[in-house]
Length: 185
Length: 398
Image 1 (tube, each protein chain N blue to C red):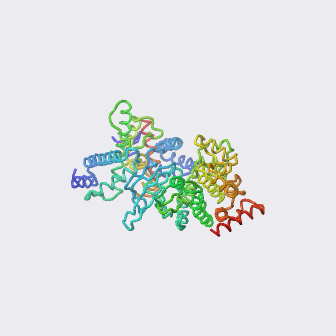
Image 2: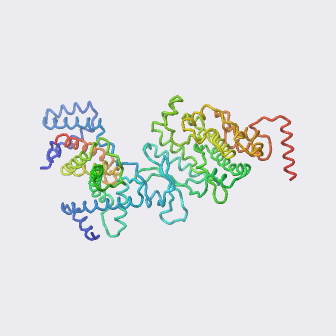
C-alpha cells in the first residue's frame, strides 16, 4: 500500500467512513505483525511488549516519510484495536500450535493474561470489547490501551487528551459493562 | 441492535452519568443516594444497583487488572533512553540489562552504558526519590569511579541509568591473566580502596563491590562500576517481599529466601545477608573478601562445589581462614602472613564494629604494609617493630 492510499484511509477514517476504518485496522495489523516478525528474526531471544511494538511501529511508519497520522494519539487510537486483534490471534495460533498448528509470534509475552483461561475466552473478551465499542467507543479504547497494549493510566490520559482520573473512571465503567456482557450473553 | 449485556446504547447513555456520580460516593452515602433515587426513578435505581454490585465483584476479582502485556518490556536496539540511542546489548542480569549506547543527537561522540532496570517493584512514589539520588550520585567525580551521568524513566516506565562506558577486564581476570605479583595486585587495588573511601566521605555506600564491578582499563587503571546503583535499586525495590523477609526473619528463613536485590552473596557482609543496616563497614568487608581473593586466587569461604546456601551459612557463622593459609608459594606465603593476614582479617570481621570503620582506614593500613610500617590491624611487639624498621632502612638503601 502506498503512502497516498494510507493517507486517504486515515483521512476517510477520521471523517467517519466505517469501511475505510476497517481497512485501516487491517493495514495497521499488518504493520504491527511485520514489525514483530522482523524483531523476531533480528533477535530471537527477546520478548517484546506491545507497548514497545506500538512505539516501534509508529517510529517505523513515520520514518517512511509522508504517512500522516494527525499525531501519535490518533495512531494509538487505531493501532490499539489492531493490537487487540494481533494479541488474540497470537494466543489462538499458540494453542493451535500446541495442537500442531503452523506459526507463532514468539516475540510477544508468553503467558496468558491472568484470569483468562483460554484463547477462546480471550476471543470472547475481544468480542465483548467490540460490543462495548458500539455503545461507547471511548471505553473500548481504554480497554484496548490498558489491557491489550499495557499502557498506564497516565499514558492513556496523555494519548487521549484526558485526565488520569477520567481514564480511571472509564476503566471502571468499561470493566463493569464487559463483565455484564460476558456473564449475560 | 447494539447492546452490552442487557443495556442498549440509549439506556447506557441515560445510566452512565448516574453511575459516575455513584462511583464518586462513599459506600454508605451511596446507599442513601440510591434509596432516594429509587423513589424517583425505580427502574434506573435497580439497574444502578446491579451495575454497582458488578463493580464490587469486578473489583474484588481484579478483573482484567493483570495484563501480561504490560511491563516487563524488553528494550531493543535503536530504542531511545533520554538523549541516548541503544546500540548493542552488553549484558543481562537479574535486575535488568546493560546496553552500549550513543548520544542520539550526535552532540558528542562518547559512548555510554545504559543500565535499564526491570521495573517491577518500582513504585511511582519511588520515582522522584530515584531521580533525586541519581542526581546526587551524578555529581560525584573520581578517576577510579565510572561516572553516573543521568537517570530517568523510559517510554515504558522502566528506570534507566546512563553510566560511563568502561572498556576493561575484570580485576581478578586481569591479575590472573598477567600473572601479576602480589605487590602489583595490592598496588592495583589500592586506588579502588581510595575511591571507595572517597565515596564514603560523601556518605555513599557501594553495597555491591565484587570483581565484575571492578574493571581494569587498557591503561592499567582499575575503575569501579555501579557506585550507589545498588542502593537506588534496593530502595526502589523495597516493596518486594524478599527484602522485607530478609529484614525480619530468623536465620533459616533468610537462608531459604532468595538473595535480596542489590547484593551478591559471595561478597556481601553478614549484616547485608541478614538484611540489616548497610554501612561503609559493609563495603570494607567486601574489600576484605576481594583482597583475600586477589592474594590467594581463592574465595575465603566458597569453593567450586559450595551451594549459595552453604556459602551464606559460612559467611554468617564461620571465621575466614587466614589468607596466607591459602597461598602455595612459600615466598608469597611469607609476604602475606602476619601483617597482611591481619589487615584482611580485620576487614572481614563478622561484626561490623570490629572492622575498619571506613575504607580510608583500610587504605591507610594497606599503605603502611606496602611501606613496611606497622599496620594498625595488628599490635606489634618491639622485636617485630625493630625488624620492620630494619627492612625499611634496607629498602631505602637499595
